[in-house]
Length: 277
Image (cartoon, rainbow, N blue to C red; front, side, top):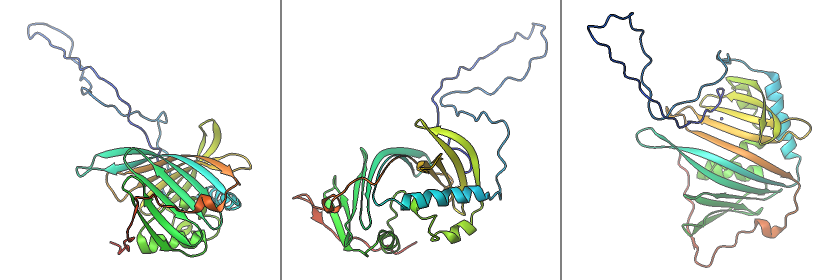
């Protein structure tokens, strides 16, 4: 889940200067010109020297994600809004970025996750007894019996159906369930301070075997994760997921908030079992 910041592309136009010189003209030796530029250009970091991070494991970075996770787990209920971008890689290796908004309602037990974009929409419901995946635009849903805790449901739907829900990783660092991943980290360090949507944060970067990831954690006694980035290093195109997060601690919910009620024309289908690669 990147040790180097994700840099967005900026649009720019470059003019190529073509210089001609008469063979009969006597002039000082011409200096080599820079290669012509055209189209899109890539911004560059103001940091002239690369950050040396290989093999760096800072205890402070590990402590920060544990404190963040424990703080999230201390809530009885949570409401979250995520503005996210997900890279989709085309057959010829071009990265296409898809934006969407995800809202979360969570309690114990129970959660509702609602992802909405112009291209795709999905809703996930867990009411303490059943887990449901619903596609409003396609008009299909699938419901399966589910275990009695949020953690068990997340593990079950991943292992059995190959479904990994957005942001669940943020909750797993403080209870020991990710101890093996902490031991296997390739690097973990603090990048520095950053202001995210007007909020002062500490910026941390981590590298695992197949992914790089970053998290920006709010300073102070409310360590909310305010931004989260994951880079997939198994794909040469390095597809990236980015989310900016707003949180609400202990909002009031009712059972109706977590109950799935299908539309009149929605059709029930079977959830396919994940067979792995």
